[in-house]
Image 1: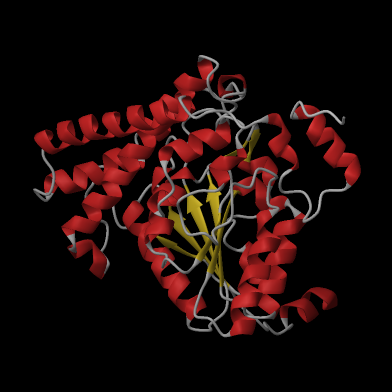
Image 2: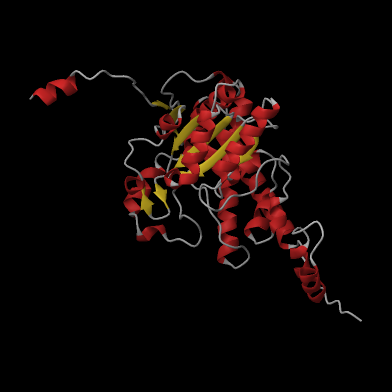
Length: 365
């Protein structure tokens, strides 16, 4: 009894909270006053067009993989609002460090459709893309881009450059030491970095409840010494607003921020996965009612910003863009085998130089 009384008298030295951001309901109605940028119909339509293009592109990429013309591919079905919303809030001089499922962010920042296809087709020239030259390439090893992000942000701070490193990864990555160590370093040094965890509920076949005991992923930022916010990842307006605030705070010297984007992976993890083996059709169908593309379209239609004719025109336009990109991808001549040696050393050691000559069909006289 005495011990119980003593514990009750212990002082509270700190309290923490995690807030959740949402503006658009699943039916496109408004839950709370919209941010200022939402008054611009051109921006909202641009966000919508980008999500539709990404969805159609994903569908075509899967078809290419199924017919042997593309390697393993990771679709964004159901989570298009996350990558598009985040990228739309970035400045050109900021640096994006994406995961392998963030095609929407790359496309917004100028990467060409055929360049993405080249990468997934096994051609590294796809990473020599048309987007900002300092953006990082696709990162397939889970969470390993987070330390890179802190390093980039540290360089920005050291050089006194008003730029921000934006790092994107999935919910499973938050269980990796790489991610926590990067966040801890960013917190200690108050770096201009924004970490975005796309919580799509599944780390391949592992559900979130087996991934972490935390009530939210956003609270993981608290241990690193900065703010974490949970956002409705199916609401592109909320994603854009959260990214704007987080990036602005990081740019203004207020340290890093963490965004947990709660969404759902409606498709398989990749084209090498069969999600029906570990989750029910009923679960997936329930989440289709939350998806981001229909949500924004409903809002635009309700505000007379979008029509059936607009939708038909967009579908035709996106179809044309995708088919033209596929044609450029399929007609790109493969690299010569000896080119694998071209970027290994400033001066290629003779051991490798001999192998290069052999592949090139050259022979010593």
